[in-house]
Length: 228
Image (cartoon, rainbow, N blue to C red; front, side, top):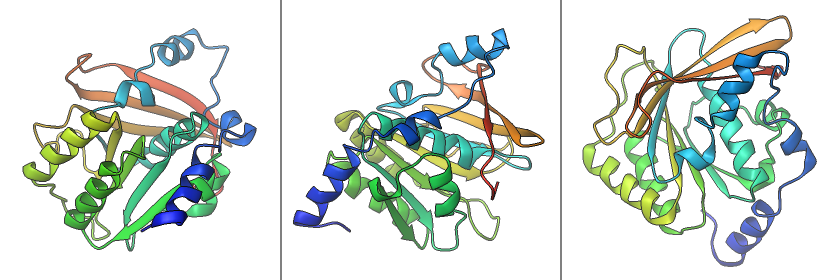
């Protein structure tokens, strides 16, 4: 965990990481498709619409949960927002792919934890600092089992997100028929991908949305990193 001058140096780096590399790799829209342009302009899957909310991003099979979450990280960095990514020790966070997606690794806090309880505690501590605009919790179990997040933890996270105008995105490994983490989840979406040679079509579909209602889709095209 960053302390004192180390934290100040990190925040200075994070808030100044607007660079052209991140801005150019947030996502490649297919400008020839009216449907994609319309979906992108609806601004349903971007940091501004997720602030103050507990979000669950899930899928199983041909998923794009990591890619969709990384898109948000890159977007946050272009806005000078510090970001934290909390992942299990044996998780799938792979720094070269993240960097290839336009994320400045020097401006990203990555915390390895043993389980969901530890992840929630770390997220709470980071949010209380009021320094982070986006916190991602990778709750995918390496063993493939279901991961629970206690209602009390969810309640504290929602309160902190609203107090500090931050977005909390939880990544889970489950089908759309499986219940969400809990009733305090404001938005639950699934992220799916379709690969066409060197390009990815990434669709984020709302299964539950307390603000806008379920059913909307947000689709972008982008070039896939080498490891995806």
